[in-house]
Image (tube, rainbow over all chains, first blue to last red):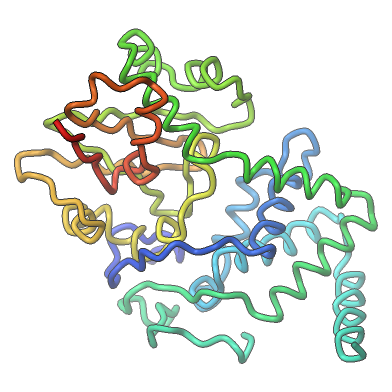
Length: 104
Length: 220
């Protein structure tokens, strides 16, 4: 039986890095966006949908991405699935932001 | 994936190599930062939420700190009746004491450490944590290494945190889920009978409520 990528209990692993990490604005914003979107009052999606999106990342993505980087990809998948924004809109926005950065 | 990502420890656990040790990178790629900004700006433009909603949500999250859990623990030590309520049904006992609303919080169970039994909490599948009373989990709690190892070799993992328990103390690892969170009620340190509840709060650490550490006895 193949183990799902997120199912880590009992797997071999090295020492635990005990350093505390300062939370960045990126972490805080992604965390807050996820919480607002998953809030039952709005009902955009549920925490279970969020988990499904995170847990369906490939093994490469799961381990190459940081914690909140996985979350931001899950948010992208869900807001497109739920038609809050379209893939086209997102691509146009990403292109515009890249252009602006190059000009700056 | 983005080229500016490199891994500090060398090998990753890839799809094609299920036996490689599990670990992950730290830091955020330019690609992820750009994606966060694009999503945030679009969702604000579309009135899904406002910039103010986002700020308030961040403030709420940051307001939840381990001091809340410490207040619960100190009261449980000071008041046996409260302790009984807390262990039987944690959410109402916590809501009444702290005046916070846990309506949207998943189920929460408080597990009591005794001289014979020590509990440590984890979430092997993701990062479930009693955020309502302890705040955001520390980075190591979410790390693949902690998630993978604590259920298999808890004594060794606790030793890495500097916690060495006598062999006759049973260690029980409690694995959280998206629907059920746990918090540890640590063993009250000795020679603290004379301390006020407020003074007790100051002694209680986040790690003791996760169960990776025990509280040191006070000076006699």
